Amino acid sequence: MAAADQNDPELPALFERLQQDLTPREAAEVDRRIWILWLHSEDKTINRLMAQGMIAMQRGALDRALERFNEIVERAPDFAEGWNKRATVLYMMGRHRESVADVRSVLNLEPRHYGALSGLGMILVAIGREEEALEWLRRALEVNPYLDGVRLLTDQIGERLKGKRI
Image (cartoon, rainbow, N blue to C red; front, side, top):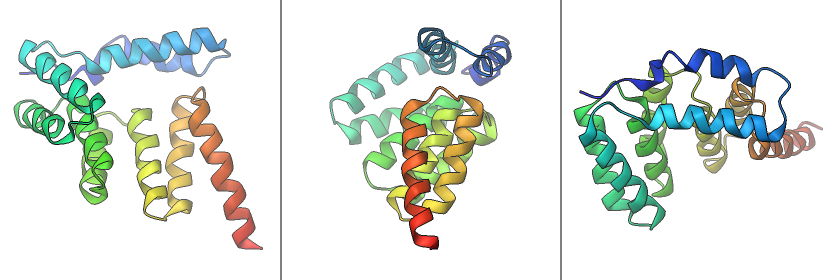
């Protein structure tokens, strides 16, 4: 059984730290530490499958990656990062509806998962639902205000939407 490491006792202090005035280097270190915790399982099989899935995803072998992440979700349904990685692969495959369902599973397990929050925003942009996307991107920035790419996308969408309202 995988540990639901979105519940790691170190996380609340890390999320609190993200609400402070940090240098870019400090923010990157907090972000790195959060991802390490999210990605880690006490189950060696889950860790092996995660590593295999991430390598396959990076190599563009999306079907193989999906198989690995499917296995993680089946073996450890309380492990948020399994759902998150599967959501990412499904998004990359253009399977947006399935990706959204997995993101919702991530957020049920870890509402502070700014990767899933911003990912949901990106899915909604991809399917033309920019107003709704903006809400989710802003939620990601509330959790982690140091997401420069998300901030830029949020600003761009905000400008486009302003133009449509005139």
